[in-house]
Length: 124
Image (cartoon, rainbow, N blue to C red; front, side, top):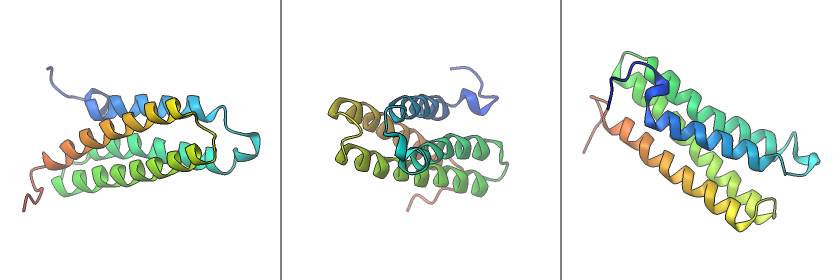
């Protein structure tokens, strides 16, 4: 594995970006009346995941890094909730939901790794 010199080198960001693209693709099929409702909300939340990973990467203090990575986790949990809603109101097929939900789990684990590898992470 090469040197990480940019947030785009982080696997967590790469997989998060793949999640962003997946969410944009599936939300294109949402009803038009959801454009300023669920569609907008889930898109903003998923973009927030990768934005917070990127911002955390640029921070110098371990506490700042952990704070932004934790905010990314919060946004990711918001996305997971919104995906359940989209599934339950039948905007997503079972397969679409499963594919995107699986990606959220992967991203969650990767961001947890970033948090746990921050030098000041409290492991108690």
